[in-house]
Length: 207
Image (cartoon, rainbow, N blue to C red):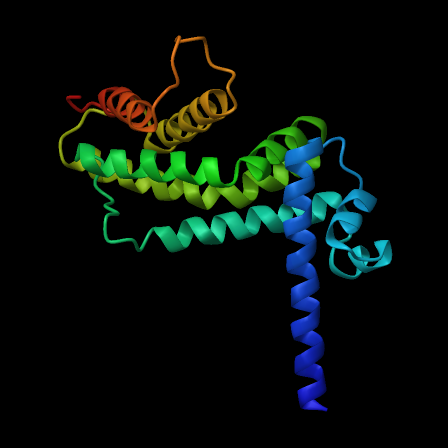
């Protein structure tokens, strides 16, 4: 019985993972708002009814994807290059570069989150609730910078919000190709360095 239960749990976990992966592919192809649950199950090669065994709705699936992203972000915080002292420009750059790469890797989900939040205030509120611990994490970094002598432009939590929104909007704009025509591609390193210098100067550092 225990063996059978373990197998069923493994199969259920596999189905859930396949539905999530299929959703990401369909979101990238059709956009979140245009995606139907039947599109996701067809992409995964699963019966439509199987979706509801794992998720109550498309929004619930997207919330699960957000939870996965947040868990991945938490795991990156133990990276050897991570520092919590934003008085050090290298620490700011690490966070900017990490987010830039993270957004590129998960652009379909990030775009879906933006679209869902625009049309569904309940989902937007739930997303803010889930993301808030990350804001406090950045605010703690800013407190360390203030303690080290940087003159923050405002309350650390307010500045943390500006920090994260700026990086997110910058990445969304340039990685989607919506930025102004430079006559050349925007190199990743140039993007990261420019944004790092801008942010670091804004929090009182010398870029």
